[in-house]
Length: 93
Image (cartoon, rainbow, N blue to C red; front, side, top):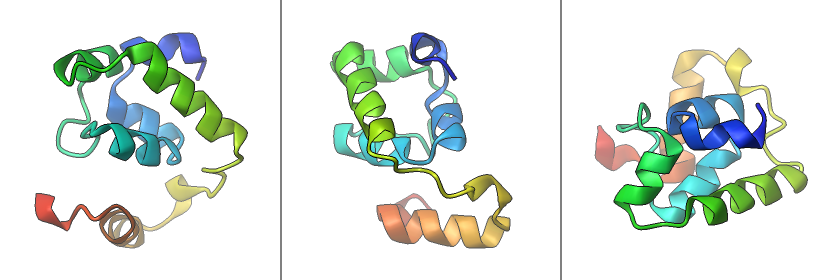
């Protein structure tokens, strides 16, 4: 996905396409789990975040080479366990 498209893309879709984005969203307090349908620019506006700053963080996360694990190929139960454990999201259940 081109970074120019990120503003109008749902945060859930951004994470689904590059799981490394989850760390960036967690850092900024962007809920990609329960509010995954929210577009990035809307999520940033609601939290009074600069969308360009968040996009920069997403781009730098990509440059670090993170997110290369093919999470889309994992069985759903394994993926859910990983997300809940790795990002401390058990509170959403």
